[in-house]
Amino acid sequence: MGMTITEKIFARASGRESVRAGDIIDANIDLALMQEITTPSIYRGLKEVGAGIWDVERVVVVIDHFSPPSATWKADNVKETNQFVKDCGIKYFYPHRGIMHVVLPETGHIRPGELIVGVESHTVTHGAFGAVAIGIGATEMVYVLAKGTLWFRVPETILVRIDGKFNSSIFGKDIMLSILKELGVDGATYKALEFAGTAIGELTIDGRITLANMSVEAGAKNGIIEPDDKMTDYVREKSRMPFTVVRSDDDAKYSQTLHIDASQLTPLVACPHSPDNVKPISEVEGIHVDQAFLGTCTNGRMEDLRIAAKILKGRTIPKDTRFLIFPGSVEIYQNAIKEGIIDTFLEAGAILCNSSCGPCGGGHMGVLGDGEVCISSGSRNFRGRMGSPSAQIYLGSAATVAASAASGEMTDPRKFLGE
Amino acid sequence: MGLLAIRSVVRAKYGDNVTTDSITSSKYVTSTKPEELAKIALRDYDPAFLQKLSGGGCIVAGKNFGGGSAREWAPVALKAANVNVILAEFFARIFYRNAINVGLPLIECRGISAGVNEGDELEIDLVNGKIENLNSGKAHQGIPIPEFLLDIISSDGLIPYLKNISKPPPDTGP
Image: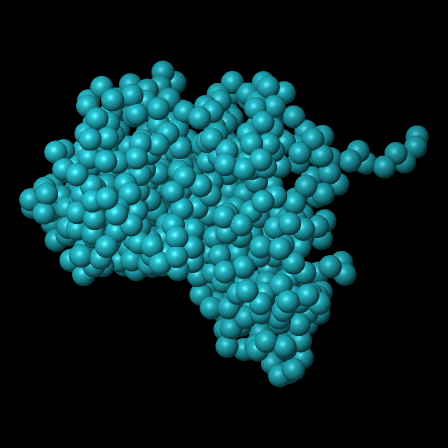
């Protein structure tokens, strides 16, 4: 019997001819991703076990959450992360250059066929490039750094087939929200989500990244997309390193197949307080928006900024709505300046912030007060995540966020974009 | 192997989808020391949590306990708040691994939510995944933790485990 792309990558990484869902294996790690929230504790753990790093070429460190730090303990974390990088001779370090999951594909670190782990649940983002990318905890990263391997249970795969032509007001986010509505927040627990179908080829690289990024919102171990020419061209443009494209066999075994007809999709939002509480935007239109938030590893990329600027061009954001924009990386920020997008945002009355995770995790830079309503382009709307537990967080595409910012209330982006 | 058989009283019972955001909300974190993280455990979700656990005990939860963020603070906080074992219908995968790696035992057991009440005393056999409710007399069969993970739990987490396995073998002389 054939293997899925995920099984093939696990087989190669564990030095086996083949693996099956359910097998427990030790696999060699191709790339380990770290950030400043946990790097200090990982460094302490490494010292405690008396180990060095197995291969510095395979480690990437970023500073993106506490960028810049909003409390003394966060500044300490940044300082200790800098120290770790110096002491251990880390070669690939991106401090304050944007969000890990935006910066790493841009800088050529993400390649098809690899096994990637990161101390970050949204490490799954990199499955968009045909890699198996998995979030792990801080203590496990001590083990990875010391040994270069980690145990895994090979996951069953749910095949998500997305076919049909979606219209121009539909984005990766809307497609993923429709999938989350079907699966629920636990529907893919311990499993792989493999996205396939004719609509994938039509999606931009940025749109595909949104699909993989939110796999973890269904509980998935990884989300993955077979690379096509559009994707391998992108990777070759960014990386000079060789890579192997892996594809699922025709007779690969799937635990479940989900069919999405993209032509039937309308703009969707995830309503409070769960990413699977998905409704058409029409059901919440008119709700006053206190904060609109464009950014994050889910939807803070060039495509997102461009569509938001198209909607905001020549408009003024109502004074009782604050619109926060965090370009996902410094590279995106600079491109947005060149394209005049940043001027459009500033003229509309938006607050331009630095390339970082921003208030997504609720630490700083735009938290919510009691009962406030936020429309976010991020991935999570758990109760209290961005501030007050009585705040209401909605999730939507960058277009839905920008349309709602422009109107000061929840708004269907088709009002500005047409069908 | 005393660590692998636990007697514990159910001090808190929760529903489905308790996220790591609910367990350790980042807005309340002021230090990542376990004793400080314990103080914010489940603060908004269940303000009475710390009081309930003051004498130690276990949590019983529904489906998908520990979903969302990969933050290891969540099991660290619960362990430091005197939780000695968590039982749930099933766990989110990163939380499951993190709990084991910080030495907090947990068992997945379908039907456990309906089978126990707050205040029940449980006898928990981690090796076989068996849970006996001493109040009702009912037994529940959970999913046993694989042996190599039990070794990590018995060592009180992955770091002590790594230190143990890195020790040179005792010198037995010529």
